[in-house]
Amino acid sequence: MKQERYLTFALTKGRLADKTLGLLEQIGINCEEMHDKNTRKLIFVNEELKLKFFLSKGPDVPTYVEYGAADIGVVGKDTIMEEGRRAFEVLDLGFGKCRMCICGPASARQLLEHHEMIRVASKYPRIAKDYFYNQKFQTVDIIKLNGSVELGPIVGLADVIVDIVETGSTLRENGLEVLEEICPLSARMIVNQVSMRMENERIRKMIGELKELVK
Ligand code: PRP
Image (cartoon, rainbow, N blue to C red; front, side, top):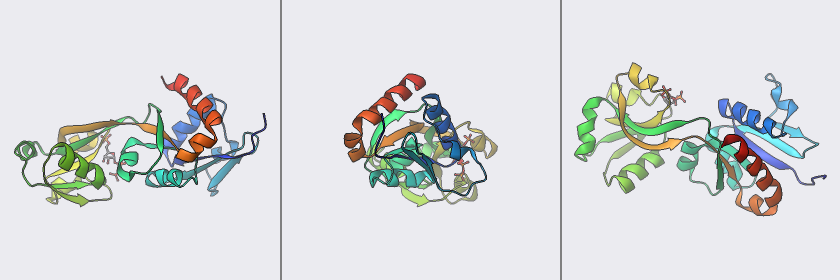
C-alpha cells in the first residue's frame, strides 16, 4: 500500500545509529544512502517506503521528537532522563547497555553514608540532582562537566561523580570505583505523542516487529 506521509527517524550519531540501522534492516526498513560514510548529507530518504532518517547528537534527539520534527527517535535512556522531553518511550532496544552510577574513590563511600554536603560532578546534572535530592534526600553541590568526568575526583574538583559505567575500565584505570548504582541504561525508541495517534498503525506495526527481534 502506498504511504502518503513520510515517517522521520532521528538517530543518535555513532554506534547507536549503526546498531539501530542494523536492526531496522532486519525488519525490511533500510536506507541505502546512509551507508556512504563519506557523505556530508544530513538527511536521507527512502522514497519507496516514505521514510526519512537523520543523525544528530544524542541530547538533540528527544528535542526533535518532542517538537514533531522527527516522529521517532533512538537515544540512550540516560539522555531521555536528562533531557526530560515529552515523548512516548515505546521500546527498549536491548543494546548500548550500561549503568548510571555514583563513582569515586573508595574513601568517598563514607561521605555518602553520612549524607555529607559533598560536591558531585556530572554530565547529567538533572539525573544527579533527582537522585540525591529526591531519592537519597541528601543535599549536594552539583557541578556540570561536559566529558572526562572521571577527572573530577582525581583533580579535587568533586568528591564523587554521576556517570555512565559500561565496562568499568575507565574507573579502574583511574583508581575510582562504583559506589552506588542509580539505574540500568540502554538504547530506547521514543515516539512523538501526536505521531503516535496519527500514524498509529504504521508505528505499532514497526514496534511489534522490532519487539519480536529484541526479546
Ligand atoms: C563514557 C562515560 C565513561 C566511560 C565509561 O564516556 O562517561 O567515561 O564512557 O565506559 P567504561 O566503563 O567502558 O570505561 P565517553 O567515552 O562517552 O566520553 P566522555 O568521557 O567524554 O563523556
